[in-house]
Length: 310
Ligand SMILES: [Zn+2]
Image 1: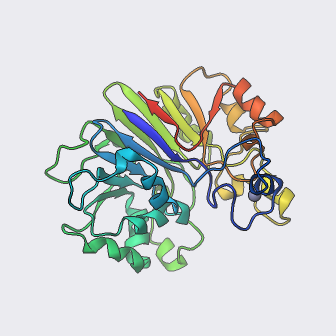
Image 2: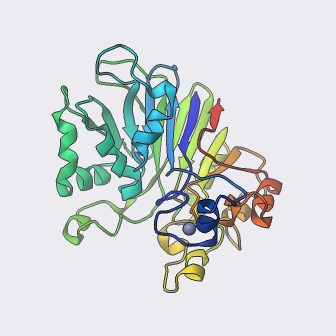
């Protein structure tokens, strides 16, 4: 299995167009000791032929163009991208679906709740139905492994299995309250496990709720790409007063009591990588104490273009 990091920043990217935090200002000024990043996006393959996107970032078009493996090869309109797996209905995770609208048949895997938000309440996504055959929405059941394939009669990609783990987060604020009342709260935010043979990766760009919901899955994984959005719980409030805390936004902070570093301190596996890093996060600065603390705690910090082979 190959896991490619096409983007590693949180929503807004790094730098963010309207942000004047010290990180964003330094990147614009060309003096930041670290890299710019596009919004979080992964691509996974088990056979080097069919690729599955994990979420669909607002930067997806540019990310596909920057990845030779995702270029069409057969001279016609085609794509090695066989499908997309969605973890939540947040704008930053689904907006890129609109970049995939050029009459391309695809499979989109999501929970029922996420699918209903996108297909019933946000009619713009109907542009995907114009493909021949139309884009096919597939249910991602909770806690049950399903094979990821390019289509009902296709074996392409079938070596890759995916499971959704409910994280007990919330649906995005934009979801209408009438629709929200009819959706299962368990289907709002999931982590994904990707399994190929004996190898397993886990992806959770948001970690709301209690660590007990996901911690057990880490022990059996080889690679974990986890919520590195915020270093501290009050990070946004320190820049913009009245902002929500990291936890209120569905993100476990990296530092502090009960933070991600502390939660995983005793574990030697899996290989752990912080991803979905917000532009305010001090770990982006490679000369910062916080960056060093991550490395000393055995973490890697995702950057665009990184690849993992399991
Ligand atoms: Zn910023």
